[in-house]
Each structure stands twice: as structure tokens, then as C-alpha cells.
Image 1 (cartoon, rainbow, N blue to C red):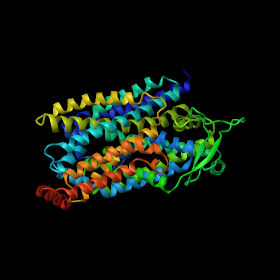
Image 2: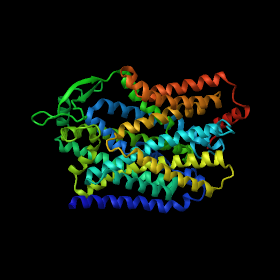
Image 3: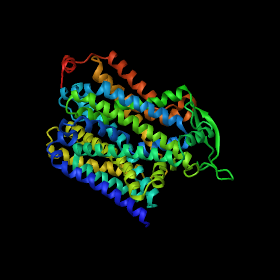
Image 4: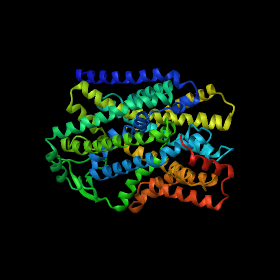
Length: 521
């Protein structure tokens, strides 16, 4: 092993040690009760709430998936996705955060999203809670798998170590510190990781521009590739049967005629922003913030971090192609552009710190996903459905066992080394956005929404994601739009239609809604 590899490893080990120490520091407070373990006792400050929400949301997708798309096919998909995400972040903090913080406390002091759904509609049979918990388990298993793919690709690209072994080790590490610390430790460590991520993105972005010879050279390269810099066209690599971009006799990458990126495709890409309204890892931060009076500050912090990070991630992909035009020739390998730039631009130890940003992004998300899925099973199905008199100790033990199961599922999903982080994340993102997004919005804003309508919308939205992705999207043409958009509309329509066709909510539900609207927290 070369000295540069050793220095990179040392930097990463130091970083991991810092994260583990945070878990140990907060372990005692996190295990005091289920509310502390799963929601941090509702005492997150504005900085922790904002940055932990964004870090847990973006994951390794921000440093690998998004730059990889920009590197391989140019600006269009990456830029419109980033615009949709930035708009969704702002609107979620603006119209959902304060209302959900208030209503989740009024509705039986709910500490998980399924808790809130059932309590909001006085669902004594816990049907809504159970269905929501199952959807969370399925989609977060996919999400956790995407995070493990990131870890495996990172260490395999850096050192040539076995992908599967590295993926498993990374997964076990995240499992351990999530188990130790709970929600509060996870949120504080996510704050640290958000800072590492944005610093890494900024340094690599600026360094790449300097290395390629300045903005003028970047622009010149982009203009030389058909459709690469366009927002209404998508560059099309000329690939062989194995999906590898072909090279000319001189070694230059070959490009096919660019494809149109029309209004419908742009609209479906912008629909990424709709996903925010249904993201449990973000919504839980809204429920856990200390006071609604601090949400305005959190919103400003979150959107600033989001804009800087998204811009830098897209720029890294575009500039990386100008610097290394023939290095990464498949859509999957293109997701390593941040890694290659870090190694090229910096001394080994500093590169290790930058690459710890990928570990930061991955861990900040996978710990959230594992903890939320664990709470869905332990708090909502075990206690809410199977053993309503369960003690805090029993609930937390079920939660720990569930973490082990999720760890195993994530490893199985991540076993395919050729998986695209961007595509795996987009599937799970659509699932949460369509399943929970319409329900969160209408539950906070529409008094007439009832239990049958909520259940119909959730099931129809989630089912449409699977149906559209597997059966309709392959038809191509207009049907190839991102499944989140049609699924979100289907869920919304089903919710409104069924609510209007069935009996209004009970008076107790209406009175609670009116009380929440008047409450200051």
C-alpha cells in the first residue's frame, strides 16, 4: 500500500472516531425514553434541525449521484433536478415545518410519522399507522441499500478493495453508531457531517475549475460537446452493448446526437421537489425542533446550505468531464468523479478529509433511514398494534432487532456493484413523496380530510410508483416521465375523492384540527 493511501485512511479514521465519540456522548440522554431515542425529546436547535435535515436528506447521492449524472449526460437533468430540490426544500420549510411541529404535539404527542397519521385521524384500529410503517420499511430498505452502494464504491475506487466487503463494513459501522446514539446523536453528528459535506463540495469545485485552466476553458469544453451545456437538450454518449462510452482513434469520447429535454421531461424532473413533502427523515426534524419560533432561522440556514451544495455538485460533474473527458465511461463509474477529483487535486491527507465528505453524506442519511424504519416497526407496529402495553425497554429492544434486519436487507440490495446511486435513490424518493406527500399536506391544511381518504391516497400513491416504474415507464415517450409526478397526482386525487364520498371526520377530530390551528408552540 502506498503512503498516499495510508494518509487517506488515517484522515478517514480520524473522522470516523469523531462521529463515534458523538454517539457515546449522547448515548445516555438518547436512551432515557422512547421519545428521546426516536425524536431527541423535541429539543433540536435551529442549526441542528436545519443542517441535520439537509444532510440526512441529500446522502451520498449529493457527492456521487448528482455529479455523476452531470458528468455523463451534461447539465439538463442535473440542473433541473437541483432546481426542483431547492424549490422543494424552501416550500417544505415554509409551509409544512411549523404546522407539523404544532400538530404532531397536539395529536397525542406523536413521535413518529405513522404515529402522527393515526393520531391525526383518531385511527383506533391503527390501520393507517400499520400501512405507513410498512411503506417506510420497504422504501427505507431501498434507501439504505443506496447508501451502502456509495460506501462500497468509495472504498473500492480509492484502494481497489473488494466492493462487497467494503460495503458490508460500512453498513456495520453505521449500524453500530445508530444503535448507540439514537436520534439526538444522529442529528448532532449530521450537523458535523453537513459542514464537512459543504466544505468538501466548495473546495473540490473551485479546485477543479483552477485545474482545468479557468472558467473560459470549462465553457469552451461544454460548448464543444453537443447538448452538454443545454437545459433543453441532453448529451448522449455513444456507447457499446455494455453501456461503455466509445472512444475515437485519438482516444476522445464519442457522442451521439443529443436528445431533446422538452417541457414534459423538465416538469417531471422538477417534480423531485414534491418528494420533500413526504420525506420522513426531514419531517421528523420539523417535529423535533425546539420551538416553532426557531423555524424561520432554520429555513434560512437550510436553503442556504442546499443552494450552495447543489450548485457545487452539478458544477463538479461538468468541470470534472472537462478535466477528465475519457476517464469514466459508464453511467455507474461516472458517479466516482468527486473521488477522482479529490485524489487529483489535493495532498493525500487533505484528500482523505474531502472524501470523508462522502462518508459524511452516506452515514448522515443511512443512520436516519435505519432509525426511522426501526421506530416504525418498534413504536408503530409492535407497540401500536401487537403489544399496546409494551414498556420503553421492550420497544427499544424491538427497535434494535429491527436495525439488524434493515442492515441485512440493505446489504442484499447493495450487493450489485453496477447499481446507479442516482437511479436507486430516485425510486425510493418517488415512493416516499407519493405515499406521504399528499397526506402530509392535506392533513395540515384540509379540515375535511378523513381516515378513508387518507388511507386511499397513501395506498394509491405508493402503488402508482411501483406500477408506473415497472409497467408504464418502459413504454417510453410521454410515459417515461419520473414516476413521482403521476403518483403524487393520483394520491392527491384519491384522497380528495374518497374523503368527499365518505362521511366527514368525527367532531372530536374537527375540534382538534381547530385547536391546532390556533396554537402557538
